[in-house]
Length: 259
Ligand SMILES: C[S@@+](CC[C@H](N)C(=O)[O-])C[C@H]1O[C@@H](n2cnc3c(N)ncnc32)[C@H](O)[C@@H]1O
Image (cartoon, rainbow, N blue to C red; front, top):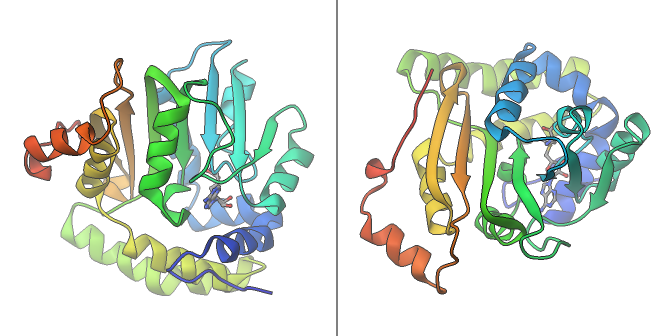
């Protein structure tokens, strides 16, 4: 059995690790985030602002907890993930949701087939995250939205220090008590620390061809919610990189930081 994925994020190791944690995934999440995940998820759904009858891709959907609010609101949500263990737990819990096995770096969907795409706490685990951003761009309709929720970098130094302590010491200790596979939560802590900050991810989005990139910090930057839009007209290959380079440093990115 693979206990935890390495930071190289070999896809087979990541999928097996999530297969292992699947049965207790949602309970452990609630405990480790001290209930904050519910608030974060509500903010993601508000940012998506989907209407009944629209079609949304929830990528790296896991057990479908991030997909449920859309299904509940009559939105046609496709919950896609490559861990069969996570998908099975999700399907058992919510048989009405359309769960599809698929790899974020090679999505099994046609071009322009979703009104919007979203990924919650998944992009960090993908071995080639920029490829996943490009794939989500491909399958989203022109003018369609992307919303990403991901752990990020707390902005206030004291808060950052306290959070890092929690991440590296308390979280693995709590995980030993509540999780079936505590090693997976060591990976969780390490992968959060190794993940790029808010501006860096915003730059990746622009480089991948997304426009109108903004982000909002939640809980002082522990989580960031990035939003972007697919351009109405597709640009010739390589144009996205040229435009990103022309626009200059990351600091110039249009931001929308609301705490
Ligand atoms: C932390 S869970 C998030 C699940 C759900 N979105 C949520 O908010 O609870 C991360 C998920 O990413 C999935 N994942 C990681 N890499 C993937 C890839 N390359 N393709 C598809 N899913 C992937 C894992 O299988 C796992 O279910």
